[in-house]
Amino acid sequence: MVIKLNVDVDPTVTEVGAVELAGAKATMINCCLVDLNYWDSISTLAGEVVLGYFPPVLVATGVVPLNRELWIDEYFSIIADIVGGVWLRWWLQAVAVMSNMEMFVAEMSSDSFQLLGMAERGMLLEFFGKRSCYETPYS
Image 1 (cartoon, rainbow, N blue to C red):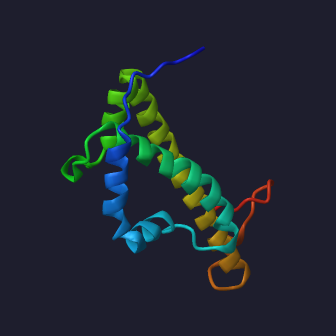
Image 2 (cartoon, one colour; image 1 turned 45 degrees about the vertical axis):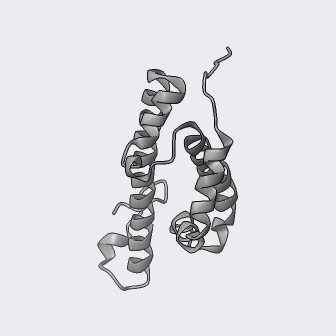
């Protein structure tokens, strides 16, 4: 199956965007690394930021004219509609929904293990220290 996208990427627009962003390096790095607080997250940086953040931003800045007022919520969906049509827009929105659900589940899982650890150390009630038959916390 081959999918052809009829898009003209203007590299000069991307270069202009890169020049404008050069002055805000600290802010951009802070935004990219906001959730990477632990030493084991360097692999996340390599896989997620380099492969997941920069290519879509480069394509988005090369496909549409640089107008910061248009960069609002769901703008990547609008760009996906421009690049690939309605199917790409729906696919991008579905992936965003699944990603948000996964982040919520991961956060709740880590919170329950934190409560378990605190209960095992005597900081919380014993109720929070109970485990299921799979050694996962109930709380």
